[in-house]
Image (cartoon, rainbow, N blue to C red; front, side, top):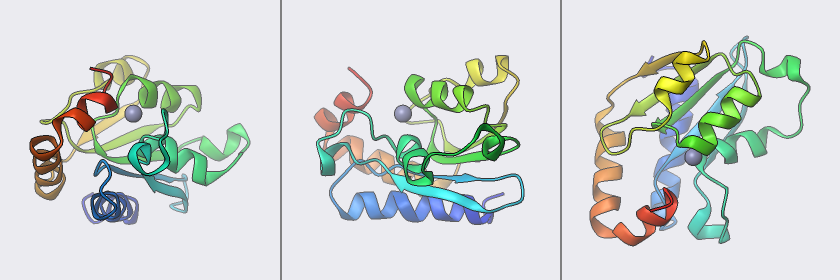
Length: 148
Ligand SMILES: [Zn+2]
């Protein structure tokens, strides 16, 4: 699953976010047939945005879609999704959430499972390292991101 195009895209997005001085989290939304509908990274710092977490960026970059487009879809994200992004995945009935890591932050995984979503955690080394470095260097930005 680490070699899924959706996960590879999510990691590339996280690297872009890091290079821009932002929060290094990336995501990609992939349809049932394997098409990448949209990809993006956390844009809170870059855009002064309150809501553009990586998953929200991927949804936003996918554009407005009918409910059928999300049926059977997978959200790939480099970090365990927060309450907002968990809610967005549930709202749009995304079937599966593939997560790079949940050591630096554990989000709404139990809620996703309770709502019938398939949750896969890869425990991916580079995802963990990017977050560890960011949290160490910019703890205030990270706390802002998770509402602390
Ligand atoms: Zn989020």
